[in-house]
Image (cartoon, rainbow, N blue to C red; front, side, top):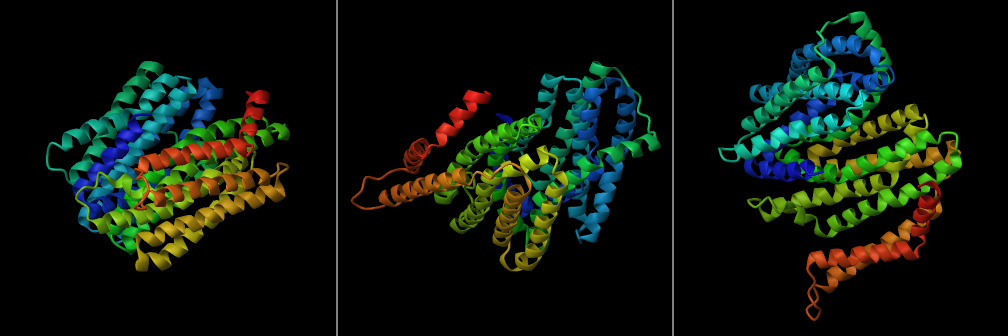
Length: 464
């Protein structure tokens, strides 16, 4: 819980020190590698977690084969990404950074493989430690870097070395847990394994493209500076979305557990609307009024630069607001066997994303990418809603959505009134944090009087 916010603020500091253009280049190259990262794994990590958890006798055979594949990918993947970079027109310095970052991402997949084995063996404490190891070393190295002259090249190498150290230490831990297993590549068995893991690979590829293609397209079609502006805003979206990515797996497990009990699924579905959307709505409204407060670390930025970042941030968080409500719908669909339909919806979102970005980014830069993110998120949200409405036995709780709409309207009006009231000459001046606290209390009171708390109490009373 601590490592992520610490890294968030450190990443802000890094961008402040090396500049928007340099960080924009880094963000684009890192995102480019992320787009193709599934090729360094092919969904195997997720599959073997499931496989080894049910059959521990397969450990030696699978580990030996997959470990060999991962070691080969440490060489093959960076070479492949270099060819992609050349096709996209990157120059020598940029290709050098791309190769280092691609090697780092291949190391990350190796770490995920080691963790998959620990998870399958139910070593959750060790897996928890392993999950933050690379960030822990990265934070230490970045703090040391601040004592010297900070530049992009040094940061890129630090990113790679933090993963290398983590991979080596984690491999030692795996040896202690399972003993030494000699790497041995068996191509037939590996191909068979890839066939079984293909569904996991497909979903990962689609989500990767949908999430990271904007950053690459901004840098290629607009400028590195625009990419840096977008990265500064998108970083906060990533940070606050962690709440959803923490909560939604719980609902995924509940929906899957009660596959043959639609009445219980319906109660969790209703309950989930309140749990997922209320905290996200508070954050989104705060950012709409005081988004500039999040860029306090960019001390050397001009007023115009902060205004650019804030505008992109506010637009992106419209998409976050939609996610706060409708990401639950995607979770329901994937948990109940509708992965193919979800994949088709994501493909539609990707096409909208790429086509609109290609048209508008050259003219409007990061602002265009932010609005396209909103449009593609709205398409996905409405696709989920309509599919559940017409195809699933569960009912979309429109009465809850209506109540939430009223609550959020009251909340936003309160925020707006207090913010404008504090600016009036004859009024008592209210600092932004007092406006936020008072408005938050109004939000809680509105939830109570709207009857939404009864939904929470009903769920907890019957299915705690």
